[in-house]
Structure formats: C-alpha cells, structure tokens
Length: 303
Image (cartoon, rainbow, N blue to C red):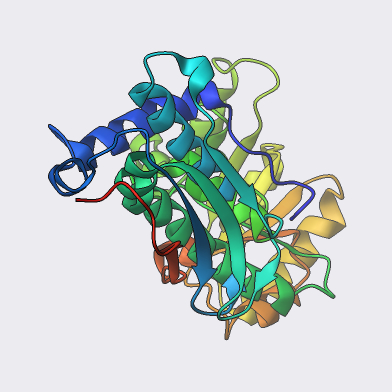
C-alpha cells in the first residue's frame, strides 16, 4: 500500500455505507429471508480474485458487513462477524487467490455480499490502473495526481483508491485550494485580475494555482507570484519551454501538466520536467477488478 494512502474517517464513510446498504436491501432481502429457517445460522465464505490486479477497499467492505451485522443484532455485543484480509491493501493479487476470509451470520453474509463486493471491485479497479500510470514514470521525478472527476458520492473512496495505487490526491473539493481555470480567467477579465480579486479574500494558507495554455499566460502567472502553474494541454515542445521559463524565474513555483494524459503519453509529459501530472483517467477509465464470494458448502439453516 502506498505510504500516502489514508483511509477516510468512518465518521464520513458510515453514513454513505448505510445509504448504499439501504439502496440494495430496500424493505428486506426477500431471497435470503425466505431461504433461512434459522436466523442464528452461521457460515463461512472466501473472497476470490478472478483476475490479476491491485487490491483496494477491503477495510471498507469489512465495515459494510459489520454495520449490517450490528443492525441485525438486538444485542450488539452478540455480533461475532469477522472479515480477515489475507492480502494487504495495495498488494497485487493473482487469479484464484483468496483475498479474504469471512465468518458470521448467514443473513449478513448473503445480504451484504453485493454492496461490499461492488465497493472493493470498483476501488481495486482504480488502484490497478493507477499503479500502471505510476509505474510508467516511477524513475522520473514527476508525481501522478488525481482530479475531481469522480463519481458523485464516491469521491472519498475513489481518491483513497488512487492513493492506494500510488498517486497523490489533488484537492478533494473546491474548498481545498484555489484553482483559477480558463472560465474563471474569462469571468474576471484576465489572470492578473483573477489573482488580485481572489488573493485578498482567501484564508491563509490556501495555495493559488493558475491554468495556462501559452507562454504569455505563464509569464503573467509568474508576475503574479502564484504557487502552482498548470500547463494545460500544451504540446511537448511548448511545455519544455514553459518549464524552462518557470525554473529560470522561480524555483519554488510548482509545475503541473494536465490534459488528455494517457498511458501512452504520460512518460513523455514527465520528461518535460514538470513536478506533477494530473489525470482523471485512472478513475474515469478504469475497469472493475473481478472478485467473487464463495460460501462454504453444506451449511445448516436452509429450508
């Protein structure tokens, strides 16, 4: 697991998990409730990786099962559900590998299966593709960062999966930092006007980043002493000139490249000398990692 990966607080995640469980369960799991004759029946299951990839989201899946287990127990101290990961977050799995061992009430195992698996499959898919991007530039100074192009409701976890894959998080939301983009510049009447209006109103120590597409815009951003200059969709030769210009004036200014970053282009972009490369692709273009749950056979308690 990446050293920068920090699991979001349960204070923020638990309400989301409750919502997602309720969305799936609705008024009740008709299938499981109709099959089980003994509500106290316990079972064991394994989670199996069906393809190779980077595993992420197992603690979140375990939490979903635990919340469900707590909700079905009159006496919460009687809950003995367990979810034991057999692989660490951020480690690579192989097809057929057991990645978790589960044990607990059968109704919890069967009712929580889909939500828990969906989350782990989605997050593992992001971590897997992110790792590919990170490894492509691992011998270069540039670092991959994610973006705000995330699924509504899943941003906390999708950005966590990005960290697990080895990327850095860009701002989580609009309140994290100031990013003056093209439409902000148009609305303000120029880069200088936008920076002037914003600088006197934001709290310390928020950073200011400005998006640029030309060398003239880079020069203007430098004149206004911004903290980060984004080179947006610049051709490689122009990006190299922009990096040289920025480095010759301000060694402290961070440089970010962005725009249509792919596995095929990211290395060439990193070689321009930028500090960061932002890309939405590891989140928006990732496929789910195929995982499944296999319940132990011959379990008592079914009709």
